[in-house]
Amino acid sequence: MSDRTCDVVVVGAGPTGLSAARTLQAAGKDVVVLEARDRVGGRTWTDHIEGQMYEIGGQWISPDQSALLDLVEELGKETYQRHREGDSVYIAPDGTRTVYNGDMFPVGESTQAEMERLIAQLDELAARIGATAPWEAEDAVELDSVSFHHWLRNQSDDELACANIGMFIAGGMLTKPATAFSALQAILMAASAGSFSHLVDDHFILDRRVVGGMQSVSEQMAAELGEGVVHLNSPVRTIGWTEDSVTVGSDAMTVSAASVIVAVPPNLYSHISYTPHLPRLQQIFHQHQSMGLVIKVHATYPTPFWREDGLCGTGFGAGQLVQEVYDNTNHGEERGTLVGFISDVNADAMFALDEDTRKQRILESLADFLGAQALEPEVFYLSDFGAEEWTRGAYATSYDLGGLHRWGRFQNDPVGPIHFASSDIAAHGYQHVDGAIRIGQDTANKILST
Ligand code: FDA
Image (cartoon, rainbow, N blue to C red):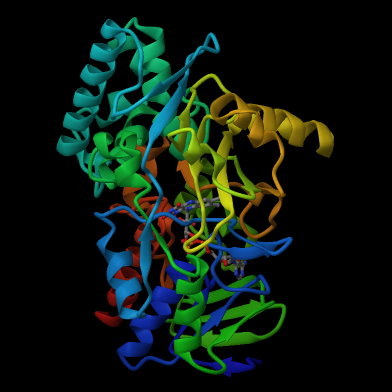
């Protein structure tokens, strides 16, 4: 017995699910969205901690992310640029701190040349292979059979150049050690952002933010869907299906429809029970897409003190606990906020510590970049999506070694009336909100065209 029937059920009220629902509804379809959490937005989440607004999840938009930029404009929202005036800080593996300006890390001349050569090589690979079907490249098997770590070291014997380049994709994007994913996966990441050069250019990749927070994009989409469309606190547990119908069972209600979009990250597909069970192919490859792990560090101070020292707040250090730090001061605020990122094994190490020691170690790392004032924040908070049942990691999923060329071509295929969509299987905008919007719209259009 269903509580409700409609045309399409959407599982998950993140940016993917909501943009799919929006597209379907605009075409006249009756849609129900079932969301496990008590809020919409998924991995975008804007909240107040001790009175301070933080972007706990996704926040930045780059200039090429036109699907998201168009949506933001359509919703009547404003964006603003990240503060970027001033010098950056680089900390070398031996702990030497250098203040610099410009795009290139202040490393020795030969390392700089080697980094430029690797960036050019990755740009060329990204342009040739692209984000849409990297598995079709003639060298896909070869590139997918070697870890990004080892691929880099096969190209160059300059260890520092390899570590610095590796950081942009490993700690910086996929949030797994560079030994855990392939060179092909790294090239997909670069291609999905337009080029590898875009990933190393923080002015590009971390360009703008949404006034009022990125979650407000999802909140407004949900509100515009109208009463009774989005159901919170409704984790979907079961999907029964035939070739042309689904019955979707959540804790709150059961909905029957012609099709369903499972708009959750791939690591959560198998937490839903399917009757009949999914084909062998999906049962196998869904196990090979796993979440990375990153702690997003937020620290707020009475003022953005680093600006008085001529610093923009940006810092990089491939060997540091906090590998990247940026000025994340909110639009129109006097207080200054820093955001930093601690990835994979460093995140494991932090979670093994007690809360006070963890905080102290992290603040010391921020202070190494920006000075002793960083030790005394007024508000301090760590985003921990690894502990969230309905995400289980951050930022997104990627294949383990060899998985992308083997299974990537199948990841967007529906199984009967069951469609899968999330930023994690988007091409352009892969792992980003922009990719979520694109794949939400594309999946809805696929359903509309059948
Ligand atoms: P998302 O995970 O957002 O939404 C899925 C929804 O499904 C969730 O609401 C979840 O609760 C729900 N769900 C799961 N299982 C369910 C079930 N069984 N039943 C019902 N509901 C279920 N991107 C970017 O563009 N710029 C950035 O700066 C960042 N930074 C960043 C930082 C951090 C800390 C994180 C975690 C992520 C980012 N991202 C980002 C990534 C970005 O947030 C992400 O790509 C999108 O939110 C993905 O949107 P989706 O809708 O695909 O999944």
